[in-house]
Amino acid sequence: MSSPVLKPTVLIVGAGELGASTAVSLLRSGQYGKVTIIDRAETLPALDAASCDINKVVRFDYIDKDYAVLAKKAIDEWNKPDWYGIYYQSGVVVRGLHLEGYHGETGIQTYQNVKAQEPKARLLNTPEEFTRVLSGGSPSVKVRIPGKEVRGYYNPSGGWANATAAVEKLYSWIRELGGEIIPKAEFQDLLYSGSSPSSSSSSSTTPGGKKDVIGVRVKDGREFKADKVVLALGSWSGSHPSLKGIIPENLVTATGQTVCAIQLSKEQAERYKDIPVSMHHDGSGYYSFPPNEQGIVKFALHAAGYVTQDGVPRTATDPKAVAYTNSQAVGWIPKDSYTKLREQLSIVYPELAQMPIAFTRMCWYSDVVDGNWVIDISPDYPSLTIATGGAGHAFKFLPIIGDLIKSRMEGTLEPHLQRKWRITRDSSFVDPARKDMIRRPLKLHELVTEQELLTGLSSSDEAKRASRL
Image 1 (tube, rainbow, N blue to C red):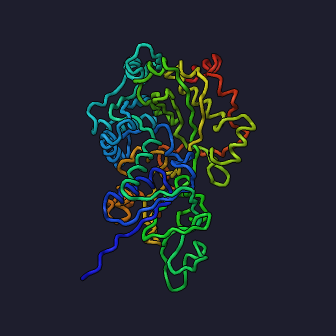
Image 2 (cartoon, rainbow, N blue to C red):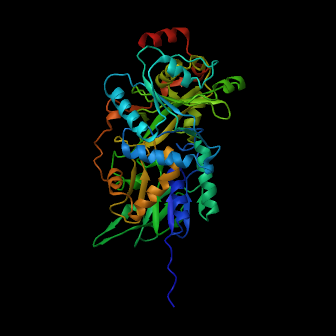
Image 3 (cartoon, rainbow, N blue to C red):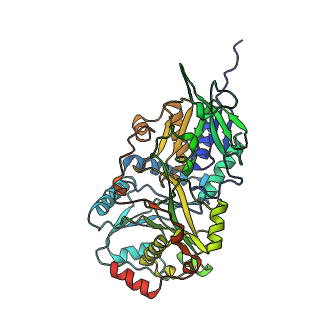
């Protein structure tokens, strides 16, 4: 009588979007044994993870056809009953197709890709057309579109998702399918085959033989072993000392992106409830959301971002960072970005630009200058898969990205996507959309003050902004 075939076990390090979605895909396949996720955070989703957020943009507006097709597939999944109350199809407005040079040209090409998948997408060529869409059809929503040459488009197939709720949904599926989620387990070292109990990534090779990864050791000394290991560390990927030589230097960088939010009254929330996601294709990286169920309007910049000296994110779970912001009465974002955010909001929704800021956030994610993710099997360790480099646009793919990572683990990912996301690619190539963007060091003395956050855009600021339009 033949013995039963043992299914491979999997350990996933990182319980954010990439890690959790991978766990769901593996468990649903029925091809794997025990699937375990560990994460450093005491409370999950981790409060400082990029995927722990009140909302993320969901759209398939890409000039890159691979991402455009995959994002449309993801949106088809978002629209299924599983995601009811988590995904909101508000539509997406993109402004800036009238601009000269790169941004205008790529905006037009992006629209052509959108139109190929969504026939109901349409160009907006006049301030009146913009106003009708950006107001959500409400005459009481004040919309201002400067200039007669403005041009853009509206894509009804897109919107936003409650990111935290989406990740929590993944957790519920993982538990239902028999997976295990372990918090308070901070990754410290990789474990290798043939290593002594005290050895880790410091002795990754031996003369005459090649080792493989068999698990990880966490900060408190516990060890977790499995047949397959997936590292999905998010913005901590590039700076973790144990991954030097595994993730190429300068491939992945933790960058902080600036976020602001305002709290609407019940009356305002009712008036603004049908506005779309709005994006400005002018190189600023600005985008804004409709109010969520709590009446919060978030607006942000997706740009080159800010970096720390040691490459480690400065977050709201860092006691020193919290102590500094509290003692100095400052927010989490630099004053320069705060000013840009206020000005961009005032271009379309002047009423909202006058309101005090409810909160700020520096959203840290793992950035890659070519804009492509890192989803690959380590060339040195065949049991180790790296899933990182979301580059600020991976979340919208949440319903399908676990399947993509699973396919790479199993060697069935389409060859052109394997090449696109390989860990050994040339890290000097820069996405043309980022060619003029420069990452800036995060300097604490430049953070916006709490007093400034309570004050809306002044009339003098309005005049200065108008003079630059």
